[in-house]
Structure formats: structure tokens, C-alpha cells
Length: 356
Image (cartoon, rainbow, N blue to C red; front, side, top):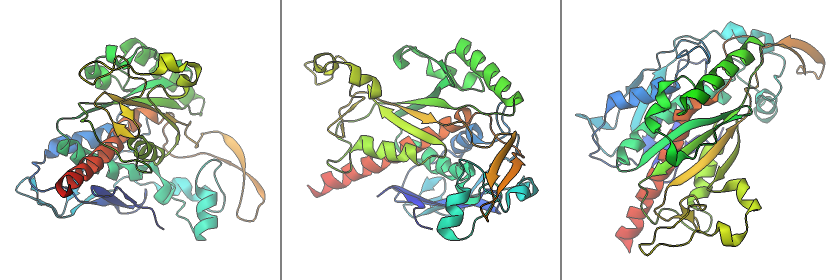
């Protein structure tokens, strides 16, 4: 299986399955001398881990990360950083009923056809549990990017959409509720709705908005390595993501060019920011902001029809511990992938300047 490494200079390779002994990764290309805040890394993992509230999967995992290399006396050495998170609460028997059949809208069928074999326990490598390793790497990237501020939050659950512009939000409120929505009133409505959907044995999707501030001018390379293209790839690599838009996004098609153009101030900043902080694939110093759409979780705790390995229709039902809505736990994942992209381009810029 290829495609387990992300990044060009600051890059992470992840390993492990949902119900294996452990998941983990190797972070390569991280500069030396970065003082590591281990508590901050664990805090990021705690934001993603299961069992943290009544509206997420009740799988109980401490998600404690162990580092094996690349850090000495609290600082990065410049060598590969190896780490692992041990799985402690697998219930593989919850998946025995799908050993010979395929769950709709999961990776089961295509994994079997592509590789001729699949780990049906929790989806194996296709499980969203793999993203915990990304969060570790992203937390280190955040510490490397100490001047940049990366904040993601839930802006929509189902049809419930928060209309307040991010500039008017208090990001300190994101962690004040289990939905991770900085609007307390909307957060309460979203939470109740997720609970209702869960009682029905169903799931619901949502949107996460991410804002990156204090970005220097010049990150991103034309033509195929545009900054927004790499951010899009990073977000679309996250499980259950169905869409990515930055700046004005799809709403921009309804605007005329005269209104959409970001007019300059004398200092090079712009009066508006429909470009989302990126022009020509290169950061322009304004805030970068984008939306990431997540589909409803595919596992529903309801009876459904599917097919088995022989192509026969069979009746089955979702079992086990699953999120009724993935977006609350995906917030730190979005931030982590954004940090990995920004760290990679920051190092690329250093290399280009050093060689010029």
C-alpha cells in the first residue's frame, strides 16, 4: 500500500490500524532546536480522542503518545521523530458480522478489490483512528510555526449554519462546548440536534471552518504546488471529507469581478479578502480561511441491505461505537493538517532563499 507519507520537506509517514497493537508515525525533516511542549501535544490528542463527550463515539482510549527518537533534552535533534499511540480498547468482535460483507459508503469493498484482502476490524487502515498520528505531527508543526495562529471550529451541523463572520468570533470559546462551535447559542442547538440524530441510530455531517493568521507573504509555488492546492489535498485526505473551499469559495461565482476583486491599501494589504489570503497560489499576508465539508458518518445503527463477497444481497445492521457526527472531533485534525502544510512551505521558502 502506497500513499502513507504526506509532505515534501516537513513530512510525516503514519502506520497502524484501528484494532492493531498501535498506531504511530515518523516525522522527518523537522528542524533541530525546537523546544517541545509535550503537554501541548497531548492536549491536541485529547481534543481528538474518543469518549470525550456524549456526542462522540464512546470508545475509551487514553491516546497517550510515546516518543522514541528525534527529541533529546526536550528539543528536536533534526533526526526523524518516531512516535506511537497504543490501542487499548479495541472490541474487534463488534465487526465480526461484516467479515464477509461490505458496509455501504465505507472503504470495505474497494480495499478488498484493490488488495485482495482487508482488515474488517473497524476498517483497519481506512479507519479515522489513523488521524491521531497526524495530530501528533501537526502539534509539532504548530510549535515550529509559533508565530502563526491556526484556529478551526465547527460552523455547520446538518442544516444548522452559523452566519457570523470569523472576524467577529471569539476563538477562545471554541473549546467551551463539546461541539467546538464558538457561538454558544448555536453550539447548544447543534449539540441537541446531534443527540436527536444519535437516538434515531443515524448520523449527520457538517462543516469545519479554519483560519490561519500571521501568515508571511510568499508561501506557495506556482504552478502545481500552489498553497491552496496543497491545503485542499491535505483536507481531502482526511476521512469523510467531501469538499474544500477557500476564500469566497463557491459563493464567489455569484459576484461580479468588480466586487470580488480585493483592492489594495498602500501598504500592500487589501481592503477585502475574497482571495482567502492566497493569490496566484502564493500567500499574500492576509488571513487564510477555508471550509471543509464532512459527510454523515457511514455507519448507521439501523438495519440495511448490502452485498457479501459473492455478490448476494444480505441484511445487516451497524454495531459498535461510532460518532453520530464527526466534526467535533475533526477540528484538531483540520488544524493539524493545515499546520503540516504551512510548515512544509515555510521550510521550502527557507531552502529557496538559502539557494538564491
